[in-house]
Amino acid sequence: LKLLQEGRYLPPHQLQRGATSLSFCLSMAQSRKLRPARWLRCILLSSAVLRRAHCREGPPDFRCDQQPEGAYDPITIRNAAGTLEATFLRYGGTLTHLLFTGGTEVQGPIDVALGWEDPRQYCRAPQHQYFGASVGRVANRIANGTFVLGGATYTLPRNENGYDTLHGGWSGFDRQVFDVVTRSASSVTFQHVSRDGEEGFPGTLTVQITHSISDDNEWQLHYHATTDRDTVVSLTSHPYFNLNGNINNMLTVLEHEIRIPTGDRFIEVDSHLIATGAIGSVSEATHLDFTSPKTLGRDIDRGTATPQGGYDNAWVIGDARPTLRQGALPPVLEAYTPLTGIGMRVRTDQPSLQIYSGNFLNGTDPKTRMPRKRSQSFGLEPQYYQWRGALVVEAQQYPDAVNHANFPSVVLRRGEVYSQRTSYQLFGQSPRDRGSKAASLGMQLLGPWPSSVVQSWAVLFLVVVACALDRGRRLSTLLGGWASRLAGWGLSHARGPEPRLK
Image (cartoon, rainbow, N blue to C red):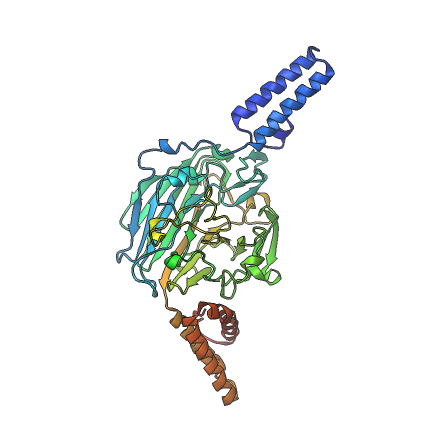
């Protein structure tokens, strides 16, 4: 009874066993048919059944072989030029492939999204990584699996080690089969009706997610939701990106250059990665400072997501701006790898970005390793996704906002409309061009300097840097931080539009 009062989630058959046993003990005690010692032993054993029911809490049977017809059939959309192509499943509204043709250092399309080769594995796989899934009703973690709305307390399944509700529970949107509402060559709209009480959430929520591929190589997502009763909503997508596409059997994404220009704050979390309600500054946690470009691997070992480091953090990128048109939104994150010459810009009207660095991908343990898709495998030997082999970028509301009054509200009232826009734009740029832009800006900055000798040596140095950026990734990693800081100083003193510099 104490466990139930604490809101613990118990599978029905275990709960029934424990409750029946406990009831029997109590009835025997009342009738005095058991001596005190036996009565006490009976009570303890019955309580142990209830406790084991909690400890053995696990995922339900997802009935992967009994899903509706077409749940695992691929749905592919592309732009008119065919330079960006995305494939989805109705199961989980899942992105399975994102092929981009335009990398300056490679020929042909590169699949920049991780996933399974066999679409049924998105349901069957014991290592559920949310590959490309649609996430809801509430993305990220809800502390203790509970929240209060309208004076009522709602209890949700604690599907992450018993501490919290992660990404909507055991059967969140990632486990639902979406209907296709509309479809064209370049867009598809999925719909899911989440019934009142699904995973413990109140109200029947009708959600539509429209995926579009634009002619300028932008994967655009538009979320739309309504409810018949007050509820909580925070939706996102969970794509795993690798802009190097594992070419030459590259195992990680640590060489990716990342910039979050407005990400000067972050959501503080506890040891279980649950938001504490406090907002921190990256100036006091410099491993989280990506306001200037740096490689993902430079400070990753200083991360606190796991004992081995890594990132699984939410950056505050500004107030929610739901009234702005998507085209007017500036990039909130830019990523780039010189291995393929592929970059990505992320735009959103959400107030935070959750970034995860593939901390639990494991390519060495035969029990948990996940084979790469054919589109990301090279050679005849089996290949597997490796530790830190992906970058997940989730645009969303603040994590655990349902339990922190100082966070932007995620309550959706009856009669209101939930709307969200997020996009991922891919582009190609050679490392030489990136270096040339650094040198060009450097010469602009050095113009006012009085000493022609110092100016000449400084310009020569920047030219050497520009050449090195094209030839050595390790050298570019060392010099990239210096160049970006110099650029930041120059931009603060320059007039006119901001040049794009890495």
